[in-house]
Length: 294
Image (cartoon, rainbow, N blue to C red; front, side, top):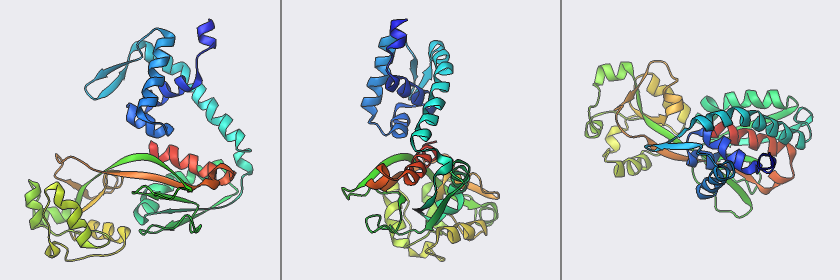
């Protein structure tokens, strides 16, 4: 009984995140910890209890039966901790004011709506300004309060949290592939039309190390807008890389080269250090972190 009373909540939290996220790396990102720190916390809990909670199967962690039993008891504790956190923020229902979030136009249009609904439920008096921009807005000059970026900022006054290693693949409409043919290998991609937001030269340089050799002639249609580029893909103008979350949920779209490994890109959640003193910014930051980690 004494051991039960002395269990460290940080150890239980590490176990809960690992069980729910499915891997130590994902759990570490979710909690904002390093993977070795998280691994030590899980190991410490196993030592405290004198049991094995996870078994490694290939690259994944699988709960043992004892681990599954513990998870059922730990989940309510996690929910309680979340509620305590919201209470510490000063009752989220009473939080009001404006929070500016900047993200790419694709993320703003296709990924953030579910998060925005959650914000409206948690804090109905809060106002959100989504700055849909593909350039990097300057948080230091307060062009936004929170930024979702694919590069880590280097300013010391900014807080940055890696919340996701997102997966991307190549996609095209069924109508385009029926007309132009379905590539069987990466070398076949050189015979197809591509559409991408921004400068085609940047995409050409990015794809070249992946063994995909394109040239300017592959980009007969270009735009600076990710949303417009995706609409052109849907209309059958060509192939484009896209987040798997967006590609898989778009009707009429097929994944090109399904056996090809994913293109991984980091998702950084960034905020000014005022995060520690502003209840409204902290609430939105925490909701974004949880949403994007999942």
